[in-house]
Image 1 (cartoon, rainbow, N blue to C red):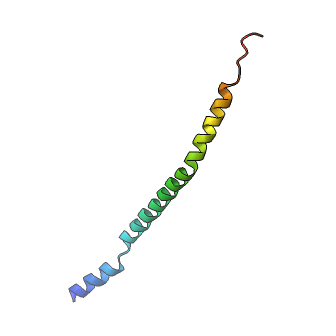
Image 2 (image 1 turned 45 degrees about the vertical axis):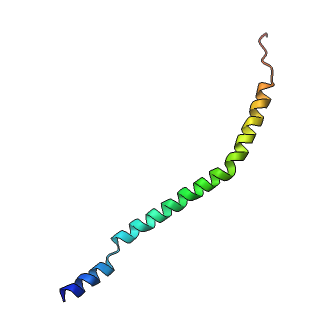
Image 3 (image 1 turned 180 degrees about the horizontal axis):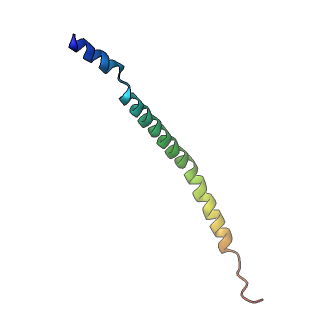
Length: 64
């Protein structure tokens, strides 16, 4: 009788399920962030180099 009660209590306990849900949700968010950074990273690097070359070609006025 005690073994059956123990098994039923173990089956009904949901404390660990919430932790698993949060771990899965956090892993999905981190994975999505990595995917976005990988996709956008190359374009931002190229755009930054374009802006840098444009700014370096500009002259600086030293007299007023």
